[in-house]
Amino acid sequence: MNFKASIQIMPLEALLDPQGKAVTGSMKNLGLSEISNVRIGKNIHLQVEAKDQKEAESKVESACKKLLCNEIMESYSFTVTPVA
Amino acid sequence: MNFKASIQIMPLEALLDPQGKAVTGSMKNLGLSEISNVRIGKNIHLQVEAKDQKEAESKVESACKKLLCNEIMESYSFTVTPVA
Image (cartoon, rainbow over all chains, first blue to last red; front, side, top):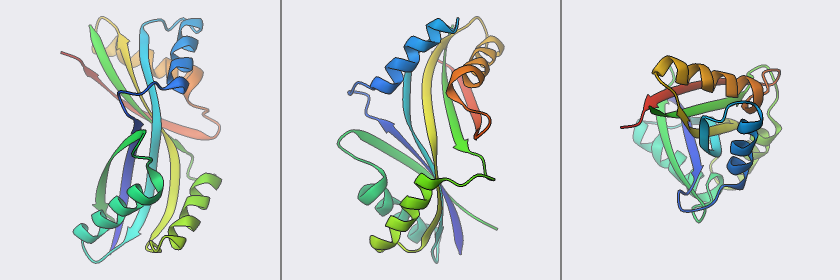
């Protein structure tokens, strides 16, 4: 079976996000001063082949831990859905 | 009123995503060869002050178009929710 995973990776709340801070500053210059607290993370889509939902989830979890997410600085969450 | 927005920005389907391609290759080396078609985009969280949901959405839309998303290469979608 084929599954689609959508993974959200964000910098931990406790850490500064310099990229987000720069973007927050730029919002003011664009006349969008009502926008604040910008934080920028990653959004990853992938396909995974597995025999059931549980196996697919464990593969995605393993990919996050081993490669996609640096758990010292980032947190992740994901959803896995079957592809028809 | 305060609103929270969550914005997903992904490279257009028609375009190559070299970063995603590199990650797909690395999956094989990690013993996760069942994972394919990795595509990497951005996930942005921000706060916006507006008098109602509609105004908040139009501000976020404007931020996407003006700064966050390069519409030639990327597509975006977002959700806006009120903060208690």
